[in-house]
Amino acid sequence: MGQATSQGAAVRVHPASLIAADVGGTHARVALLAAGPRGGDDFAILEYRKYACADFASLAEIIGDFRAASAGAAIDRVALAIAGFVIDDAVVNVNLPWPVSISSLRRTLGVRELALVNDFEAIAHAIGHVDAGSATLLCGPQQATLPGPILVVGPGTGLGAALRIAHAGHPVILGTEAGQATLAPETDLEFDLLREMRRHARVDIEHVLSGPGLVNLHRALGALRGAAATSRTPAEITSAAFSRTDALARETVEVFCGWLGAVLGDLALVYGAQGGIYLAGGVLPQMKELLVASTFVARFLDKGAMRQALGQTPVRLVEHAQLGVIGAASWYFSNHPRDAREGARA
Image 1 (cartoon, rainbow, N blue to C red):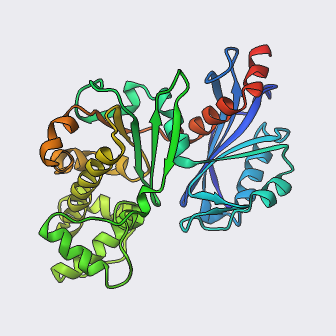
Image 2: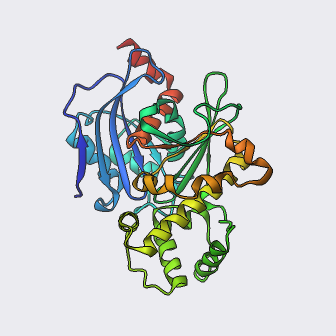
């Protein structure tokens, strides 16, 4: 049995309670939420726990642990925001530490309702809950000057992306697999790095712009520089870069941030994301100061004739650990209005 970090104490179960989980390749964040008196997006987090996925034999074990340790034991509705996409009964994602079968999970947990949404679709649903205190403006105006979709992108165990499109008071959320697209280099160094990494496999965007991607980049840059790139985690590379004593780690993070800016500019143009861009995920908050000081903004804007349009697009870094579970709950209650109305009547 693995270990979890938790917040909150035992609470009285609300008649419209829901267990929501944000499941990535590294961590699963699980919460007990209750619909509020207004229904819809009115809900509150009653309990919250964070689990290391590798410490547990299955997703069912994590959710079972949460139910046993909280007031959620009797809750028979579960909403999962999970990395990857669903084919038939299986969740397809190479970054998860174990297979996930929807029918098996529903049967093991014994729940009446098990609803799944892509993790970045969930985060796109949660953007309406982001306030100024949990987001840092990296470039562009405070408010978007042109109408258009909002793009949410996040380097974590992989790279997720989703679009939020305003529509008649109820946003339309489109999930994408942008992280699986082929990575495009621009600078001479990026071309050299791509050639180095292509010795082993096709290089997609998340092969570089993710937590494991930071490790891949560090290793490839070490090979180019003739320096021994020791085996490190993303956090160790970032920490070494902050110390200013490790030139290879520092350059790795600088290349990462610049390449991210270039790719983000491409995605903004492809998706017409004039409504704004939100950067989420577990990697960027750890390197926030390095990101701000890097070529990220310059590379984002460096799109020729489209520079002016991109300059009118707000780009924000979101630092909110509970965004995934909030998004899962927002998505669930939006798609199950009867359950939300139970909260309004309670």
